[in-house]
Length: 308
Image (cartoon, rainbow, N blue to C red; front, top):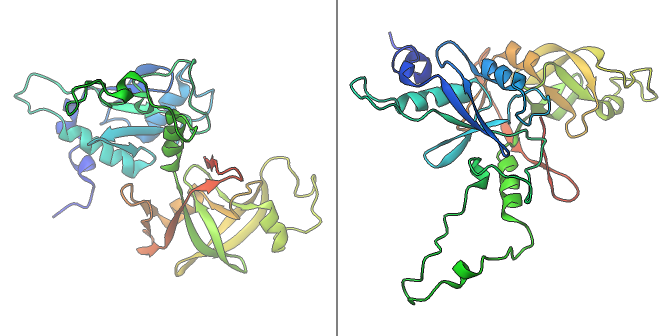
């Protein structure tokens, strides 16, 4: 009988054992290594290990989706969920040498960056092993056609638009972290854009949306549906696709989205995402696919707003 499990899980107990249980971690300011077993550990274990490790630049924040990336075939890939992790393991396993080979491949490398922390700028130290700080591969050799020194080689090019290259790379880094949104109905309100984010635990509703649609009184003030931690505003039906489920909803001060669907929703509906196609969202409880739009939020100045 054929298996539907990803190749990474099918073969994890065979050839993947050849991969050293060491991960090299490069941050914008330092490099370090951690032990990690591809057989006994999982992505949550790795997040926890990096969260507990001292002096990594995380500033005590909990490591989660959006923090880790890796390179494969000259492309940078996210390591945000179990699907990403399964593909990562499979790719590392595919690099493992034959059992007859003596040489081992280099330890897998991950890039570790707090999405809420800006990249360092010179004269501050910038780790050259972090992929955004690698030296440009532009040749400084003499021009073959003219036989003269390249003007660009003798005089490093200026940023014609006034934006340093590392700033552009930083923007590109975060622009890869667009968030998944779906359209649905909560309570009596239809056509609501909702953020689908595994980093949140519950289902949340913004205060402004809750007031506007009478989920809470319009005259609610601090102390009454106030600003003192999470406030439970009851159970509400939530419809996505053809299916309606009921969830406990908490009041949120989030201003970018009216409703946030966290792990309680994703686990109940068995939501499955695809690392290679961020717009693919399937609810395994019914097998239906949801229409998903990838959204990148910018503020009034055009700067990217990172949703963690």
